[in-house]
Length: 119
Image 1 (cartoon, rainbow, N blue to C red):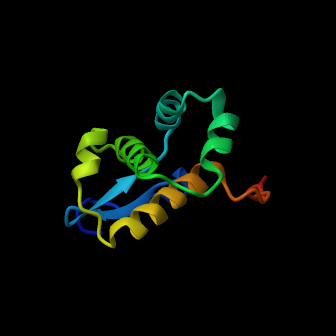
Image 2: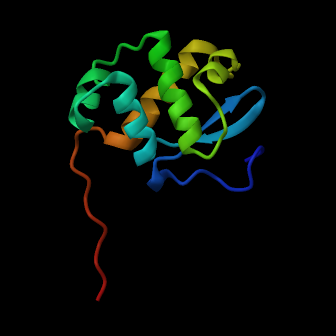
């Protein structure tokens, strides 16, 4: 993919977004999730899930989630930077990316099958 030298690692929860004309990797790392816990003043990951799990995002929610994801993906971007960025696809794409990041971090609620073990 253009903009970086490797495809996103879906197993790590990486997501690609076209921002300001270039592809960037976003990822809600443990540090990014801790940052969101602090921003929302939630009591741990369960509280963060409850806060964001409603599926209705405000513009500040989108900015916070995307900024944390960008930083988790190795990009240098403040919340103010993200507020000024242009996302290909506009606000609907921003919401889709934020939702994809959250699903990548927390899953869909379905049990994942563990990888097969080989002797």
